[in-house]
Image (cartoon, rainbow, N blue to C red; front, side, top):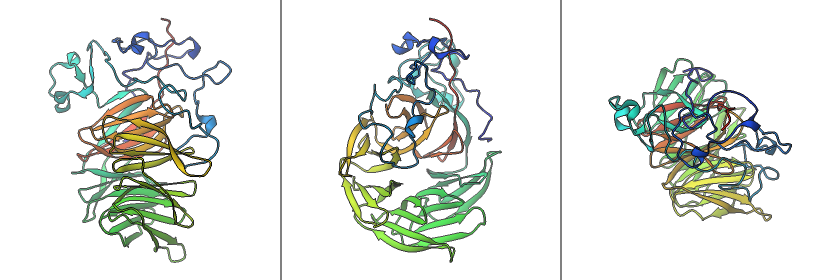
Length: 438
């Protein structure tokens, strides 16, 4: 499982032919635009032409000048609040992952369903099968490998800084360590309780289990057990010397790291949510918490006071993340909401993206060209990939059961973990360019 190389041969089923050339001479396939192209490989682009950088030349990184990223909720600069949604923000046209596609003589393929017999290795139709013989659909990313071992839902994935190991946690009450070169499981840690979440910060690995947070220093093998939580620990986040934990009883517990004593000390308990806190993120000196009570609370990191309660979601707020100066949230109410701070400092919804199914978790990263991508796991066993800020579709990942954990890795690597216990390793790859004429 060499994350930095290896299996990059997967060709984009929706993409054009290989080859270089000036992108000004590239043409978009009009059959693809109409959702009818059945050529494979097609000599023309199955994506919109790159956006212009102002002098007529295409820009390979149209968002780079915005300093757009998922590193925090920076205020000022960046994307304008009115650039969200289809047809805006210079994204691809909607439909990049939908419609009928052809491939290698297979004719029209049902892109919404993976062949059950192909999964079992018994499909006799081969290229004539009308269902997908692939775990993904879309452009620019490929499956590198699959890690088998967990027996139940994968609830956390982490890769500590400086480590050559990947760690995964599961409701099967174990944490597994994987060698990143061989892909082999090299250790299994039995915790005696279901893993509710897992994160890494520097060399530290933090794992939430019922009534405890376990902390390991992967460099010196130091282990700490933090008590105080009531019930399951669903969410963890670290900022500076502070560790926050969202718990089943609605509290957010805070520990501070004492450098002199080399330990974490209880510091505070943030009260306000009436049900379990299932998601946490930090940005712009604020802590954002999503809860089973359908609300998001905004906390001042310094005073630990609640500044605002956001009530626009109508079901459990499953995940929150920060991108540029925006907060992005998802819910079982089948929406992704984008929040923007007004002049008063309060957050308001500036865009709502609807889905057909409840959304379980969000993860943001950049593709091989530096474009920001939002990954949304839905409870129909798929992960949808979107360009930001346009929310134009980039692709879809199919799974045997719901994906509860998505995590970025080094470079262009990302990981998904599903309800069967399977962990998959994915890689963003450079998209092929087309230089044919139409």
